[in-house]
Image 1 (cartoon, rainbow, N blue to C red):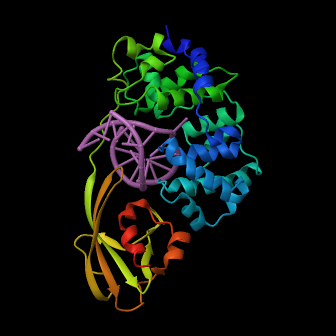
Image 2 (image 1 turned 90 degrees about the horizontal axis):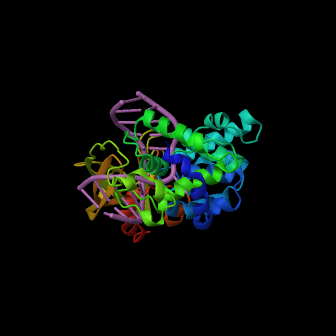
Image 3 (image 1 turned 60 degrees about the vertical axis):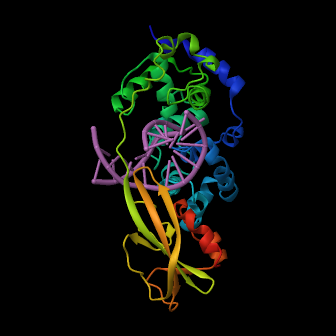
Length: 340
DNA sequence: AACCCGGGGTT
DNA sequence: AACCCAGGGTT
């Protein structure tokens, strides 16, 4: 007796009445669906909307993406986070040209070969853009399935994911796989909410949901606790020469790889250039998934225009147009702009 | 399997 | 402060 057997019909009915209007749904070409799915990885719909619009305006085809300058690509991604998604997106665009003759792979297995496309994303593109009957199991879907079926397995474990994926494969309607997958995610995002706060009175699965019947919505899904963040105290140097500020490029691997930043070091740190003047600046805090930066700025009047190898002077126009600076430094934007 | 990789909204 | 988000890659 499987509760999921009863899900497809009421879920699809609910989705037809409640689907949000989203830009990537109006013309679901493989390119549109793919770019939206990459942007939506670990990122909420509301945060993606403006990025998606600007991205499609700048790079309307997969060929445009394959050819774009990397710095311009990163500027389009600036502030969205997980920047390797953008680099993998371009790698995959070039894979489409070289490995698939410019035509998007239309199978789950073919899609899985693309950089940045894993099990979830391959299932999403295959089902939504090509009508292939495969599940797309993301965090929303794991929560919905865990509650409806009363599955107490840790959803971070591969075997739990595989079990839920198989259960979905068995009930997935072959005539509407894309709608079914999107409906499950939409239900998780808008009704079957996390942290024990589901809106069961609006749920099309309420009549047969195990967690609701057994009053276990607060306990499901089961997920292992996360590791604590470490705190780093950093000194950020806002270095000025006339109406320009110093920027440097971060290393090509690791956190915020390849993006631009105001020079900064673990505290305490000496001023990295010869200073004609030095004064205290604003403080800033930024929380990453695994690190917490507590930052204090030093305002530096450079004694000369000489900078270490690879650093640049940026005026206001260049800062806005040419350099992708992550949001971690947002706290200093005002102090910098006031000088440019 | 564990860890790394952003940023922000909710509770 | 904790949780989680239309996850994937690396080690």
